[in-house]
Image 1 (tube, rainbow, N blue to C red):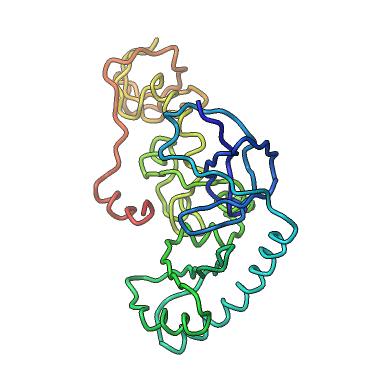
Image 2 (tube, rainbow, N blue to C red):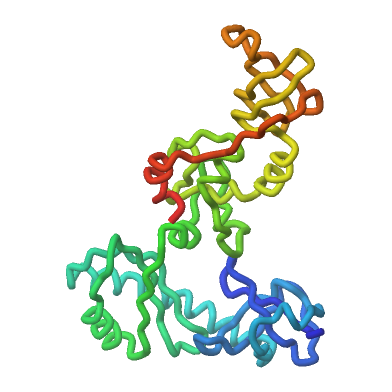
Length: 288
């Protein structure tokens, strides 16, 4: 077992593990730690706890110290410098005529590096821009290209549901979302209805997926051949949540389908949830 604390460096960012070095920390305490990017100031998102060694992927780095008032003042000053750096970088991008959109600027705690996050449709040759920025800021410069999901997470906004973006309000990390999930949940495959403001599949498709996977194990799928109290038929509509099936009866194919509860039917041959290849190709960009 290893004692750890979880530290977050962005308001809704990934939680990283550190060794508390014998100290006790509470949630929302500020700490100074060493990261791959240098010395950083983070917020404790997970107080002291013990976890299995198997859950650790690398040797733990140790917390350097609690953040002092001076450290917190340094962080606030960095935030002000980031606003100025953002304006300067936008001017330099325009000067070099680069097809890129600046999204965010971040100073490391010790001012050893300035990171500029941007989006672009393709690859961008920003070598001249980096030299120009380095001559202005006199420190290491890193330009990092991010995707549209990361852009939405950084900028925030209101989703189609009328609530703040999940990625910007509570999701620490993005979870894989697929067209198959939308299909299994019986949702329309219209890009307008299943994609978020970022233009990719909505993160919330993941929330109920485990429940649907469990329900679909017990619910006949579309195209399934079933035996009912009124004879054999084919499932043409399935609602895993309510457990109600609509079955087209073999003895009266032209008649209106009959409704049955899942427990009333016996599956003779189950159907399969398929996504048409042509349809999948058209929607492929939503998963990326």
